[in-house]
Amino acid sequence: MKAVISDPKTGKSYQVELDKSKDSALVGKKIGEKIDGGAIGAAGYALELRGGSDASGFPMRRDISGTRKMAAILSGGSGYRPKMNGVRKKKTVRGNTIAADTVQVNLKVVEYGTAKLEELFPQKEKKEEKK
Image (cartoon, helix red, strand yellow):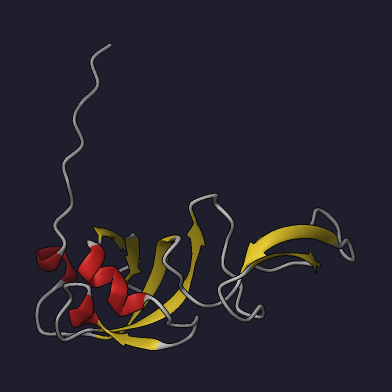
């Protein structure tokens, strides 16, 4: 599972690859819940679960309960952006609870720890591409 941690103070985000032991700390949590950052390697931080997606790319949605995948009629919000006002469409989305088949989890920093996120999750340098 991959976790994307957003820092509202700086506007930066950090990607963290989680192993199976850290995955189990997130399974069963719902969108909007606060979790301890120590569970994913950010000791001292408090993080809020904001969403995610599964292996097929279906986004999680706050108003659908459970871990199920379902086709819902949406007029906007997560999973559908209508081109005009009033347009509704049936789209497949995921429930608001993290399951074992969730691939990406989006987290937002709520309380800060002593160490900076740059130190905890250093950015990987991109290799230059030769033409």
